[in-house]
Amino acid sequence: MTTSFVRALTCAIVLAAPAVHAANLLGNAGFEDGLAGWETTGNAALRSANPGAFEGSFYVFGSNTPLFSVSQTVDLLAAGLVNQQDIDRGVLKLVFGGYQAGFSGQTDFGQITVTLFEGNSAQLNAVSLPSFFSNGVWEEQRGETFLLPGTRTVRFDFIGTRKQGSNNDAYLDAAFLVVAPAPVPLPATLPLLAVALGGLLRRARRRS
Image (cartoon, rainbow, N blue to C red; front, side, top):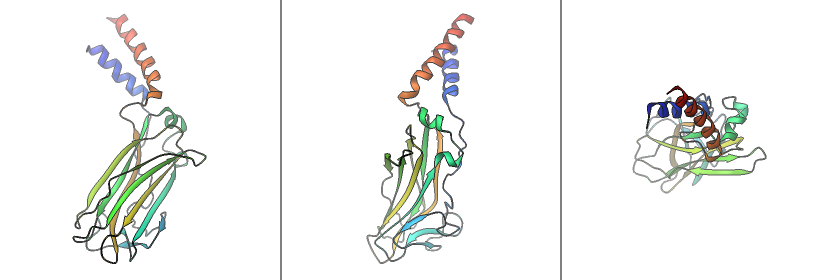
């Protein structure tokens, strides 16, 4: 591979990449303001000890309930960090997750899911991380998925399931939902990349 080809490829990728500010789209992601900004089911509540929070003072768990959930729905365009054209070009991805833990040796588990919706609220896709529990140790759970063309809103869900005891000790702290440039363009963007690359290569040949 020639130096000129590498330069051309690099330039073409840069031309295709959108400008994105990697900010967390979730409000009150660490539950320091209680459950403000979160929709809840079951007895979702706050906890602060055994273990201590991953960050700050609080995290979410389920108080005396077999099942609970917390969720947020984010309007991507209203958030102002990404534009419609970049979404529909298929050059973006979602990075999502949070820090999870549990109580003692119990096997109550939590699961994080993101769901993509069109503007008419039709579901495009849903991606879930593996169910997780741990013995009081905070561990990051992280996933990525393409932001499909047509996506306008994204819902972040955390669902806790009780297996033992009375409380639902599926813990979540420092949740995150971030839009970032996709490392590889989706097929819909390949013609744009090919045109940009072809033009750069032709100019490179004329100079050689």
